[in-house]
Image 1: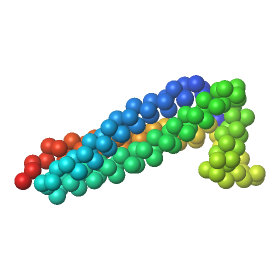
Image 2: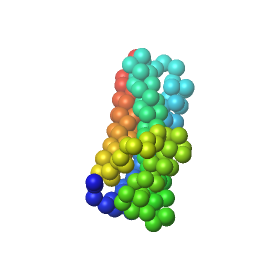
Image 3: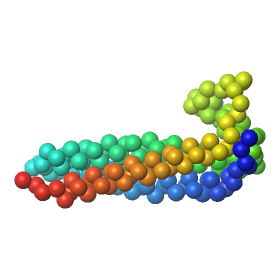
Image 4: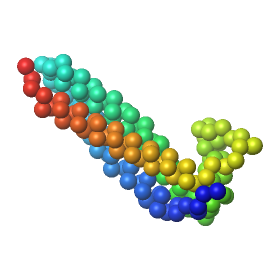
Length: 145
């Protein structure tokens, strides 16, 4: 079994996903504007803008997942649950929402694995935002001919 998690710290870390989500939304709007108002866009620059749009959509998916995890942790804090009870409550909430099958014979996942997964989602969100920004920057700086 895994160690007892520090739910407030996990929640605070996952809340850091709000910054790339807000930044990504702005970058998404800029990319859409550039695609719409720049008629003489080089083919490579247009491809970079499209890559930026795709990265923005991917980031939005990860932002939703990170926010869901943060909300679940906040729910656990409000209910005062810790350890095994908290893990079972998370699994039950995900099952109720239709996001996870609940197998009665399967053991409850430990917090170590859950925590690794939550951090992985957050890191992927940041990576998608970075890719989105880099593609947009390259598209703007690409020489137009």
